[in-house]
Length: 503
Image 1 (cartoon, rainbow, N blue to C red):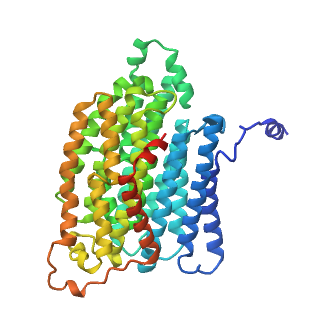
Image 2: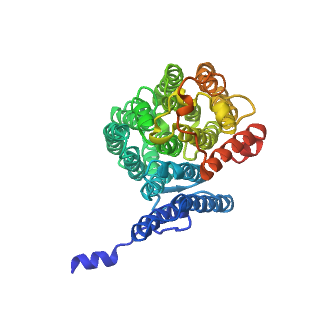
Image 3: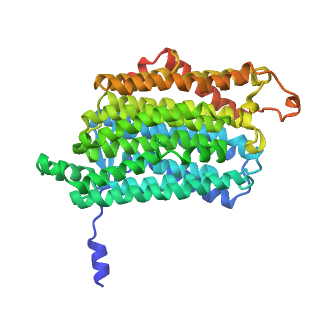
């Protein structure tokens, strides 16, 4: 009787369902696809991919509507102050939806080619995206951790989803074991922050530290240890050196569309979480964590670029390239850390957000080409697999060339706009050394992309190349690559509109 009375008097937080609409659309799409597909015969060709792509578009449209609502009514928090509704969160939600849309198109033919056609991978895409949206909008460390685990568990399963390739199984196990360690570091950091502040809510954490004097705040070993552990957990998720060891093996072993998802949606969500934690939850400790962040950024820039140029497998090359891009994003985070506060604003934050959207499109298109060239079983992802592509598939090779030039940061491509943005943000904060290191590492990394282009356009065919499986570019894959290339060139030639709308 007492329990019933307690249940009657329990009052939960007010729910703004429209404010949560992108998340709810992705979750609803995943549930509908999972239930309906399990109760009906196999859907028509391209049915699962089309449904997932449409769901991502609808979620993105709701994100645009929320953007206009924030323009009218301002930013706020939802669900009992647990989730932010601001332009940063909405931008990241739209970025994640763009990633899901492109990756769904890339996945369609791959699954049929591998004999794995089914709804499971698409459901995992949408569920992982739900976790990513929660991470990028969280206003509480526990909520952020829940989003992190939703995203991570889905990606562990996706990495091991190709049941016919032992490499896929190995990559899933490696990712799961190392990811478990990183989650433990993060959760222990949450516990220490709670011990030092009495709360896991970002607003209350800041208020608790505001109530202490400066000397106490900077001598609190408990909180400093918590911040350090949070940084370790987040650095693993963004594949920053020296927490990057999982990335090359997992990228190479996982199904290529899943690799595209990790590099796009996974990275966007992880950097969104990093911005929230470092700049909104613990801004008082910026002077303490910024030197470590600076060092990690430098190691990631140099390590990713140098290690990439000695690889011979294109997926491993792009894995180290992704690490190098994480270094550029960390340059933006370091610049933003000079002015962290209750709201995420400033050139550092804007440069990171713009970079994430541009890189999401770039990497999805790049791995789309790798998906086509990899042929059955992902067996031709080495440089030799790209040999002669310029002759066999000139349009595909041309698209890959544009995307690689953009990743190298060549002017008149979106990649140049992204890299220029983070370097400018660092210079504005007088972080001249890290800006110079970033530019040097970009020159080193350019050799990596040049090797792939030489293999496509210059390297002479060898005996037996004619007997290889032909490279196919089915309709949805062609659309994904075409959209990526078009976006890359449009932003490269006309970057002003994107710069203007970036929060």
